[in-house]
Image (cartoon, rainbow, N blue to C red; front, side):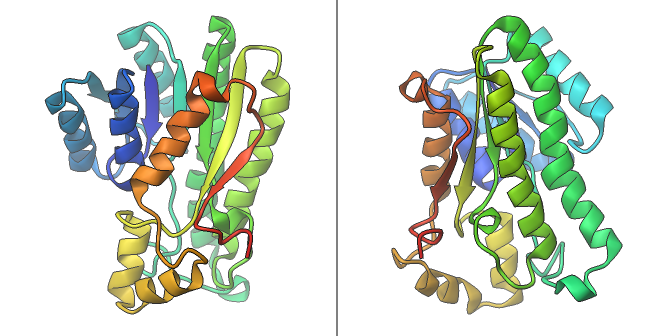
Length: 252
């Protein structure tokens, strides 16, 4: 079975659907877009899959501990986890702001969800998977965790931190049957981050596409397939890796 945080829309929703398509039972979680999470679950069920929704604030340890417990209670194990919940500077929910002008509130919110949330999820997922003797975890980092972008200081720091946590966890788990990797998406269509950036600045999406070596933004399905592959037996010898799915941005 597969657990997907931030599964109410965008990359999380499509990855949940891809997991179900591959035969996994899916738990979708969010603490913000509850209707979106229920829609993800219904989409999976309508296609003949099995899915459930459990509400969770990933920045609160009690919520995360209960999430893992309820997931195992429902399905008997935790085989795959996609720690995808995150926030970014989209000009709507979080401003694009310089380090010198960044408020403590923006810094703390970004770190609590993007970095602390991934740490808490891994903490309890690893305990369960180690007890089982198997499991695969994928964390959502970003091309922003590999390349600096002015105005994205807290976001870049949090996503770089996710890569560091991923590599450390991979080494700690290397002989336990648990693999830990990260995916680093570039600008991706169908995500709240890109949609909100486009609303704030309608020309921004075209500008982003022009800055990507492949000349277009990614599709959430392209990220989802990478996540499912990292969890599959085809990636059985892959751990501690940060996989860029970004149209060549990190290489440029």
